Each structure stands twice: as C-alpha cells, then as structure tokens.
Image (cartoon, rainbow, N blue to C red; front, side, top):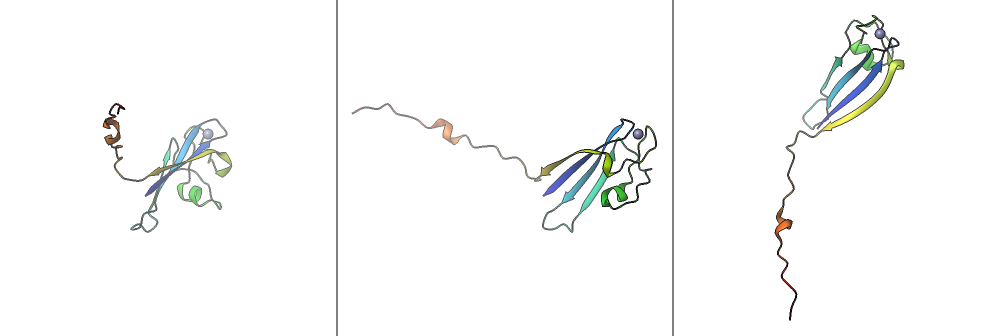
Length: 102
Ligand SMILES: [Zn+2]
C-alpha cells in the first residue's frame, strides 16, 4: 500500500509549493521512499534536523530563500491501495416482492 504525503509550504515572500512523498508500506518493500518537489527548486540550503527538508533542500524560485519546517502551512495524506476499485454488486436491486395475499 502506498501513502502519499503532501507537505505544503509557503515562503515568506508568499510563493507556495509542496513537498510530495510517496511511501510504499507494502510487504515486499523495504521502506521504499520517493520524494519530489512541486513549485519549488532544489537549490535550498536547509541543513537541520528535519530529514525531509535536509534531503530535499527546497528553494523558492521567486526569492531564492530556503523555506524550512517553519514555513509548512499544511499537510495531507493520501492512501493508495493499488487495487482496482470494486463495483458494488447490484444483485439486491432486482429482488421481486410478490403481492401479499391468502
Ligand atoms: Zn520566496
């Protein structure tokens, strides 16, 4: 099962971007992990305790600052099961209801 984590950033200059991580927590994965940036550059200079920021080094394309964990404005998680969505069977819909009588 994959989990996608969006970490939204807002630079002090007002520019917005996001760090996106995909983590595969399935049985056969060894903590498979992938991360990329949206609306940001890789030219940041963050060097601190936050593993994600230290790895991604997000930079702002508008003002060249390096947004850090303090600039996180939101976070959301999305689960992806990787399964094809199953359609609910419609067998219950066609149940005949005979008239009541004696
Ligand atoms: Zn900026």
